[in-house]
Length: 446
Image 1 (cartoon, helix red, strand yellow):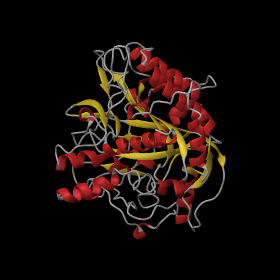
Image 2 (image 1 turned 120 degrees about the vertical axis):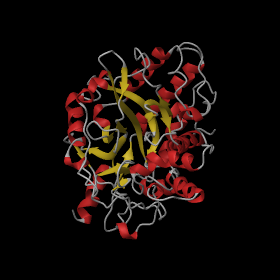
Image 3 (image 1 turned 120 degrees about the horizontal axis):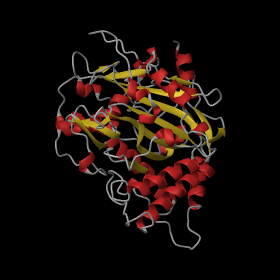
Image 4 (image 1 turned 135 degrees about the horizontal axis):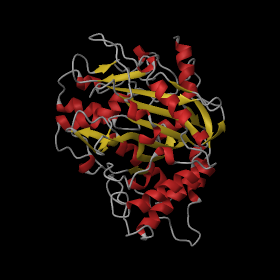
């Protein structure tokens, strides 16, 4: 594939907002001020990144993605769309050619091919992808998004709950239209679009009211969502069914199936504990067709990336990160990029200082994002730091949800730990969440 074709494929996938977005966001968030004159309480991490508890027993606190209707009354994720997702995930696009062994690719066990098995593990609100730092906004603008992180959960012959080490991201974007305007370069990788802030305001306001109702005891016992990022306090308490139902209502009233613009998958080969394979996808807004997209942090044509610990090689293909260069929406040739990735740490015996340097860059959303950093790096930075420097304080995250096992590659969801699973949040997720919280509270005057 030529460089121009690679870049065109990427540009269709990721559309970014105009330079007016920060002003429009300020106007939109100002509209959240209550009519009684009282200031809106500042939002907290658990208000914009909602992690569900590990499913147990009767799944009282869970939301099955198959049950969600959208704002028009249609299924939010149809059987046809889900079948497309599975087919693309299992296609040759996810195949990794391992020089030390046979090719490998994503395979879903039959029980996980049933949409009914997939539960929401997390909900994340984002005021603007791919990031909210001034440098990123200046180049890419913003797209407000709601990200649903879902994982398959089944029961064995004895009725025991089984969480599967696979995950999908369904990303719903709030876009008004293309406005044009981008960097002047030979090979652009992103177009600018206008955000649909009127619609996103309604969603954001509903989540703020949800927070306030929890605090007021309108959904059972009063719940305080302040503090470190962790399993959402309302979903881990005795009134989790009421809390779940309210979240389901918010999603159904505010999301539309046509807003689904991007997806991602983390899967495994058939009947194997590893390696993990990561791949991004886009959904054409016109045809509705889903297709895998090249990762701009690899060689410009590779669509999938593998992480494994058994056998030869940890990361295939090796990333071509660009997170130490100036932020740009232009496609840089791999040999002109400057950046770091955790592949370096996995394929060597790094010092504590080097581990801290590399993982610090990867975990910083002002420096690293989808366009310049590979998936494996973002999914391994916290565990590698804690392995090298146990006891390191991770800002903004409750220690109970930090990953401790190399088998846990989850950023926000249910990760494998010592033969079982537990709710997991990484430093990278906490940093992205902090960006959203800081921007929202700044615009709210907090």
